[in-house]
Image 1: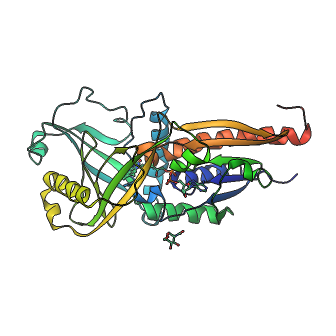
Image 2: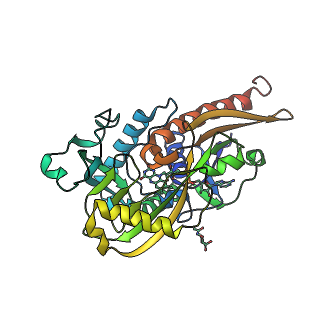
Image 3: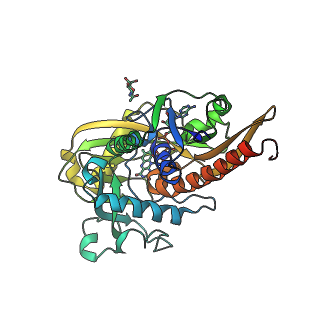
Length: 341
Ligand SMILES: Cc1cc2nc3c(=O)[nH]c(=O)nc-3n(C[C@H](O)[C@H](O)[C@H](O)COP(=O)(O)OP(=O)(O)OC[C@H]3O[C@@H](n4cnc5c(N)ncnc54)[C@H](O)[C@@H]3O)c2cc1C
Ligand SMILES: *[C@@H]1O[C@H](CO)[C@@H](O)[C@H](O)[C@H]1NC(C)=O
């Protein structure tokens, strides 16, 4: 019998991580990534790639997803692959103007060395009264995406540039389809619960900045990567605009300089905009499309909002498990056609 053919739609961090997990859980599967854009042209390329999870308003398995992702990337950061994969540890501070109600976020025991900031550390932030210090991981986004693509190609995964208008169009070529289209799923599957949260960031040259700084309300952040520092940001719910706004650029820069005055000397400012694929919770679900007696099993994995990098591995593993269920369904269908609905 032919190897099951799996198509993954989308080549952002979610599509590539999911394709990787599928090759691991189903080595006999023939996996193809279909996407209208690849790195450096995805939302995932705009992200800072910090491993600090987003709190989804819906009931979600975020802590486990984050833990699995942290464990996976921590192992890469401790391997010779780390520099090519663009993964490194970064220490820093999350600071608050007012002490938060919950002093311990749900992810505090997953990151390393989480503790309240000392008085001496707080002196760096005269406008803030409370803070948390910890070490986490960061993915440098375009290098990390290229590294994932390279790993996939090495295991025989095909990558094709293709815009998919309807998942059903893939039924004659593939046995299982995985939807990792990010905000593109709004149009692709007509999900009205999925909405964009526009984010504008600056990527600057400021190699003396080694620690991350994040305002606890999430509005302003400074995330140093291997080559560039990401300065943010904005969260504009429902906005689809992809062109940078110059007054927002100035506002972000001023907010970051008030947290870290040395950024006044930053050079080579590049402005980027991305649309976070937001939803109450990630849609991680199996569905069977059916037309005229023909069936196409689909696995959805989209809607990661502001935290796609932070939960990529956990959600990819779950999606790969659901693909495994679909393959079982496909194999049974090969042996007993017509006996399953
Ligand atoms: C400014 C900003 C900063 C961020 N910082 C962080 C951070 O520090 N940490 C963190 O965890 N997260 C962060 N995020 C969130 C993170 O970027 C997203 O959660 C993540 O990139 C979502 O990945 P994705 O693969 O689902 O989407 P995308 O990267 O958008 O990928 C979707 C893919 O699907 C393809 N596609 C869409 N529709 C179709 C179609 N019809 N046919 C074919 N292909 C299609 C696209 O071309 C693309 O390749 C940030 C986001 C922004 C905007
Ligand atoms: C990214 O977009 C640019 C501009 O549209 C294009 O020239 C380039 O080929 C694209 N890159 C990839 C890898 O698709």
